[in-house]
Length: 485
Ligand code: G3I
Image (cartoon, rainbow, N blue to C red; front, side, top):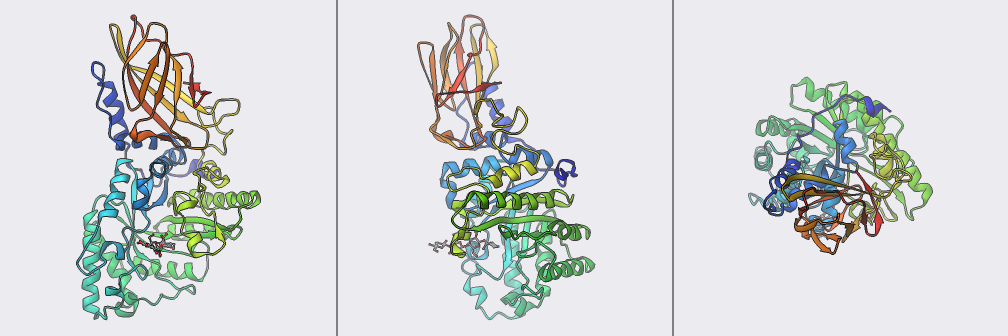
């Protein structure tokens, strides 16, 4: 498997916030700590499962596009946090979102996504600064002179990038500059500034945040064709001129059964120029209705794209365009088509999900993988660890972590067990724990109501005991006995 041996393309940001939860509970020996923020609980989940964990191990960015308003939904947040280490603003950094009127900037949605990503220790891809679409009419129809449009564009880049300098790792500085035949697309930028608008935008971006990795991004450039030849010629020319171009974004809006056979070779020719490549907006759509055969074919297509990226050291990431099929742009634009993403509308992993996971060196389905992976055959669909983090006289603090290995979210979870004889639970945090006789039940608090597929929840308890804190013999999640570890 090429991905298993690939060079780490880029060290992902160090995991830091997760330690906060552990540290918080460890200090709780004599007084239960304040409940951690939602943020910390999400961070804990995000480090433990799904596509993210094998991607983290490989040093690969595994991303998704996120919409700010959907962050209101807990299961959306959980899934975005658990499965991905890389987040793209789907719409909230586009020109019409950020500067709908000249000089009137609005960053509320973009800030919200930044806060989410930072809370979950995720890298962020900035999308996008200069694009002909989702461009407000004051720019599009402004009849600006060359000097005026340069000023307007420079201000937009400086203000938008400047706000997130040091926080956004990679930027689509220019989006979709090409026609299908590889010539430059007509746009207000191209018409007014000529093709040099691309070099100007990159140079301005570099002056705002010299550490950000600067990309030009386009679609239908997955294989070697006239359009990707145009991108290749542009990249060569920019590099020859010393323009600060770091990478090429290959969007990856594909159709089941029509993935080009030369994606790897195409990626490689860009990395041979010294550029980084990210598959920035991957989705592989199908004609509806969904059938098993189409899902299997889609899975094979996702594996092709993953393997192509993983086999080229300079391909540093793959991002899917939406958290689930319910959030995909595809049905809105392609009538009768959809189901383009690896997780379905009900948040269930599709064959494509397991194909991606397998390509990353993770599990290839519920019932595969090593014994620590979700769903090992013959094992139960949940794993509980019960760890005494602090112990004194006749008291102890324990952390209980319950992992959902079912492949389905577990909403309003309930964990039950028998507390060892003579032990009494005197306090709990991050869950509501009720003890009746020796029978104990834990249920969620506001921020951890659903355990995402492959995700986990950790809660803490203070125990009174007769001198030794013993572990319960067994736990059941929703009535089903879990493995213990
Ligand atoms: O925000 C308004 C809302 O107020 C209004 O009620 C609603 C009515 O239609 O529209 C909302 O705006 C929509 C916006 O997404 C936010 O949801 C626009 O109509 C809709 O056109 C827009 O679509 C986005 C599209 O870019 C615009 O070109 C998609 O969500 C987004 O996925 C898509 O993403 C693009 C990438 O940026 C570039 N590559 C191609 C990719 C797919 O088209």
